[in-house]
Length: 284
Image (cartoon, rainbow, N blue to C red; front, side, top):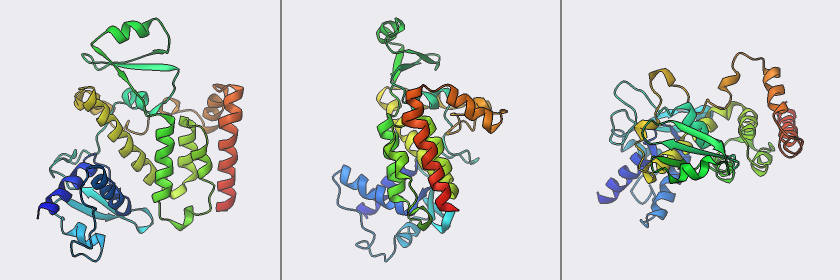
């Protein structure tokens, strides 16, 4: 019974971001959480269940099971369950303000971001600028530490390692992981995934929300100050190109390319384009 309660607590913690998890990945995350916390290994068979699905159904009061893309089983925390971010009205997942999301998602080391504890405003300026010393001395400002390029590339690799789908096998998707990370890498990777793009967005959103929540807890920042209001909803995971809405796809591409240096074109843009063309040719 005690082990069962531990499992329920872990399950609630993992699913608390409000983002559905593929069952296979959820099982891996439960095992990893047990290792990190020094607990006995998680195994549904030792609990007397032949399938992981049967073990999950044992906790149907806490979670819901549904069929995701490709027929894979997806697990969600029930609305109103302890720790769930979903409300009785069904507003899930957590909606983070667009400016906050971008501050964490853009790993540009040449720009610094700070959050004003009082107003909640995000402040940007170049690294080494005179404002940096003033910001570091201001106790009302806390530095935002974005998810590094290596961290976000790691999420891409983890997603590919855990994806159990025949139509992804053989595609040169690892080339995106091995290229130095930039927001354009994520956009190209998402497009190359085809029908699995939605699964990747959900996975990345969940990882980014975990990252933001961990930072907020360590910096003693109320998560409520980072959430979008009613007029800002829908900005989670949809901020890296929203300012270009209304432009044609070709014009948006040209604008992006014009903003890159020759070195960035050679090291990032061209490899991405080549990898995308390779994926497209293998799919056709």
